[in-house]
Length: 151
Image (cartoon, one colour):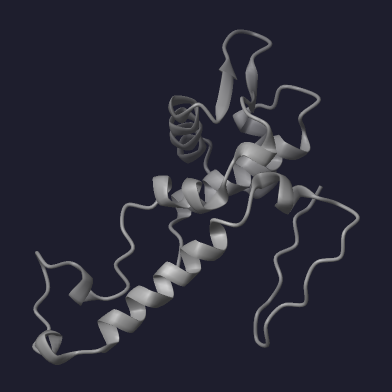
């Protein structure tokens, strides 16, 4: 499973806003921290504003902040809203599938189960739970590199 850059930027934005709840944050702050395009972040923030997760304050001293408590922001929901599809292979898209194995293939069902399991795990995660400090993170699965969030 691979998330799009759009979803990645969305999650980074939420994490940054969640760790800076004491002030308004600018898009430039987030872009500079992650060395990513301000233009891409503007699209992300616009959508987060429309969804009601982020409040945008216009004007000279404007910026952004979370509009909801981090405990109310479900990561599974955010990922579903930001990903355009979860096509793991060509056969998931019935409009463009040309694979001759599709009628007898059992892999598609297993990939579908894996995607479902991936999203089920994310459904148990809130923004608050990934921002918690001072708690020991679970050991990663073998071969998995743990994500470290800079504060």
